[in-house]
Length: 247
Image (tube, rainbow, N blue to C red; front, top):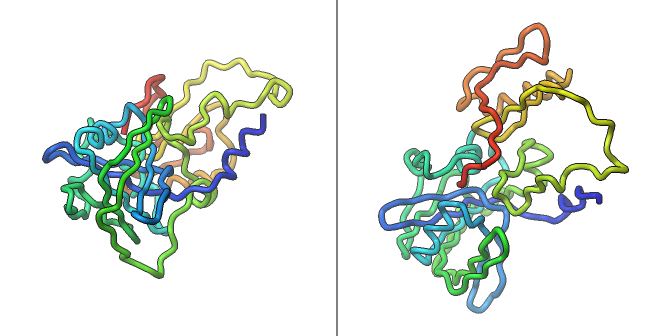
């Protein structure tokens, strides 16, 4: 199957946030869309395991922050690849509290929407929340919104494992398309910030490409240093774990 066809479905990228009492959490979402005009309703999809999902189920409220096109992985990383069970994502965030008590992220935001949940639909690994818009604001009418296509092709971002667009095993080529397998004992590593996969066996000679990509997360991951061989890349990574961390 040509699973690349999934990339032709269009999405935006947003920060979906909610609360549980005085606790706040949020994560990057690309499944946000308006479903009715009168009254205005927005649907969002989020993984069962995500902390934000738990918060929305408990509070029955959520907010959506539409992000501007000009962002980088340093900003997106904590919201998309860190779990609120491990860090407080709102500790250094610029946000406000909405009418419902839901936190609304204002950093890199061009518009926001605050919603009360009217319907919950269970869909396999994910939950769809349909919310009635109770408040909204347009912060920057001139700024372009961030799209999933731009995120993949220009920012060079990848989908977290809990994302609806994460292909997993389905992204592997079919038998007739696959190349001969190589026997290797090399370990792969995932960047703790942006999800970048470093595979020693697949490390390319495209040093410029890697430098450009990694420089986007320089402020969070620390300096990137290349030694004589581009296969030896020193930057903070962790071994890939079978079980992903929920956002």
